[in-house]
Amino acid sequence: MKFDLTYEQLERRRRIVRWIVLAIAVLLTVAGCVVLAVPPETSMDRAIPRAFVGMALLVAGFFVALLSRLVP
Image 1: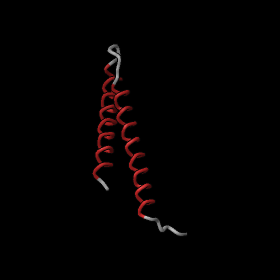
Image 2: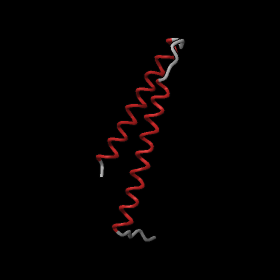
Image 3: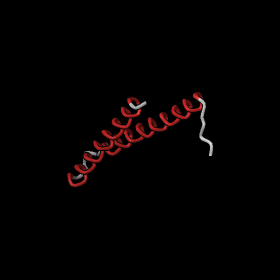
Image 4: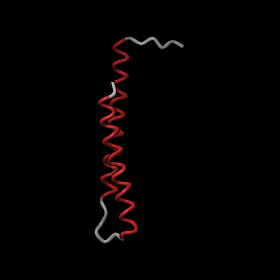
């Protein structure tokens, strides 16, 4: 198997991977916002776990977005 890539091919592949990772980060952040959107009449038994899951998704989304920009 031959894996010799030119600089342009390598940069293109890195750019594509970076956009995919950024899209995953945006999806995690949006999913966190959706989970956090709890109607006022929701019982506390269901609202508290949704709040924790929503915050975890938000933090994960921000972490993945920052990590994708900091790591070359």
